[in-house]
Image 1 (cartoon, rainbow, N blue to C red):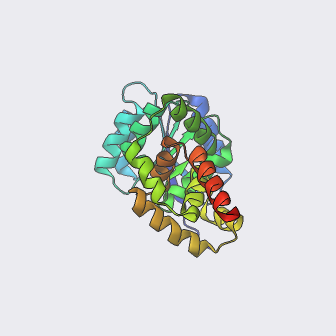
Image 2 (spheres, rainbow, N blue to C red):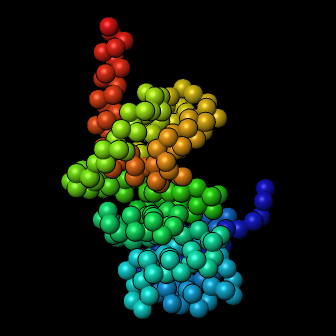
Length: 234
């Protein structure tokens, strides 16, 4: 078993939040906190001394906030993975963070296991959105009614199988979970996802999730499957 540790830095202006994250991470053998800071300025002043693998970064902080810090981090340290940790759950903030290159977005009220999962996921090069946030995004996008007709037309090009897999991705399921649910191999699911991403023009699961939610994938998926069932009956 590898003794390699994932080095993590925590940036939050609340002492209790930092202490809580430190406690959660301290129970994990493969995770190690190498720095704790109260704002982005402190992080950027100290990060060069010991560059971490992952930064847990709050959005709302004094002196230098999370979005400004994220932008600088991604321009100077391309290999650092950034998990945005915040109480913010509005669409605009989420989209800004993702557009700037955030690797994960976690709500502070999420369970500790969600934070740990996010750290490990981004360290492996994948993107992550916490499942409770996905529910918020579904309702938020629906209220906004922002459906792009061209994007919706692309959904029509997906096969029923591809549509069902995109639907499960938008619900936060991982490849293994989707494979078990659809009675397919994990390798087959990976191949389908590669095809889906290419068709809808996205690069990762977070972008695919936003694409799906923005176009009301739950309603589209239901309608498309109802059509398929009717055709089977005919």
